[in-house]
Length: 132
Image 1 (cartoon, helix red, strand yellow):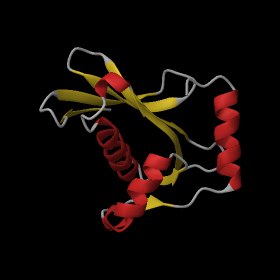
Image 2 (spheres, rainbow, N blue to C red):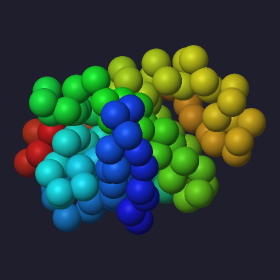
Image 3 (cartoon, one colour):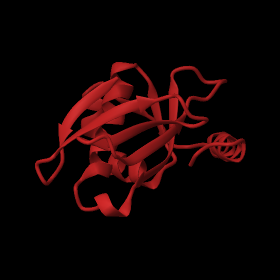
């Protein structure tokens, strides 16, 4: 999955799903291929159909271009396409869903509040060699 977007400056960027690292992520890259940011997630092994987003980061030199918002929106759109329930551990995802949750569910999205087991899974994933 790779989607083309335009950032706030009008520059083209690509958002892609990266499963090649220990921690899966949606990444955003500039037109010249520079990695600008990522939204890390884990798909819980005991809960098929769920995706736990736990960290989103954009490199400081790419700040102010709206890339974090593009990452969140594209990751959520992909969750709808994949019929996945989103678990927003990441504060950015949680804030977005708090503000736009009704719109997201009206468009077919599903999300639920994080549980202690989700937090434990994130901690185990990161401690187990993740790139977050």
